[in-house]
Length: 128
Image 1 (tube, rainbow, N blue to C red):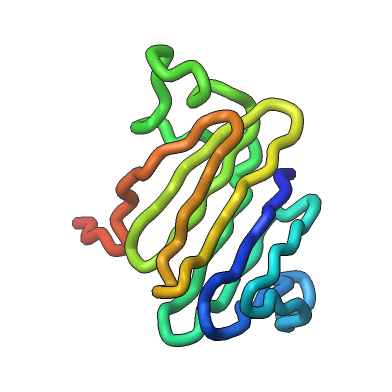
Image 2 (spheres, rainbow, N blue to C red):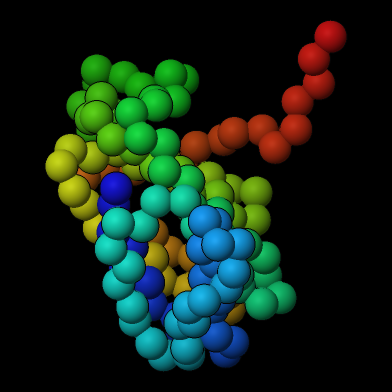
C-alpha cells in the first residue's frame, strides 16, 4: 500500500471515510497537513466539490496506459485517484507517498514520487 500526505488549503474541513467501517472518522482541517500510512481504498469528501476516490489497484495494471517507453508504468504496485471526472494513475515499487494538496478553490494537485499521469477512464459505457 501507499501513503497519502494531504494538505487542505480549502475553506472547509476534508472528511475521510474508512470503507471497512463505512464511517467518516478523520478530518483534515483548514490549513492542516496530515499523512495517512498504508492508505489503500478511501474516499475524501471535499464539501461543495465532490469526492476524491482513492483506489488501490494492487498489481492490476491499466493496460492502455502501460508501456515499456514509460518504465514507471511497469512497476508492480499501482493506484488510481478519481476526482470530478478526472483520473490520475500511478505505479511504484516497494512503498511510496502520494502528495495531495486541495487548494483554496477546491482544486486538487497531486505529486507522485515514482511516476504518474492523468488518464481517461469513462465513467459510463454502453455495451451490446
